[in-house]
Image (cartoon, rainbow, N blue to C red):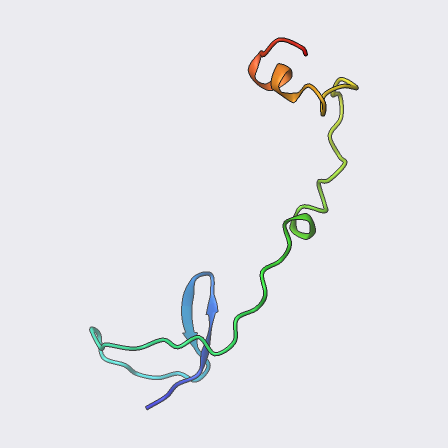
Length: 71
């Protein structure tokens, strides 16, 4: 028997209520995967929002993050 559903918070949720016994073995076949969201798209709400950084922070990040000598 085939049941349709979707993933919600990492859990399989069936579209129709089904009374399956505890311990029943099931197979899950992925029908269509959604393409991954690009990193820049998922972070766009925070990109460019940093404040209070030195003007050379991007070019001397090792100095500011790890204490390396300025080069």
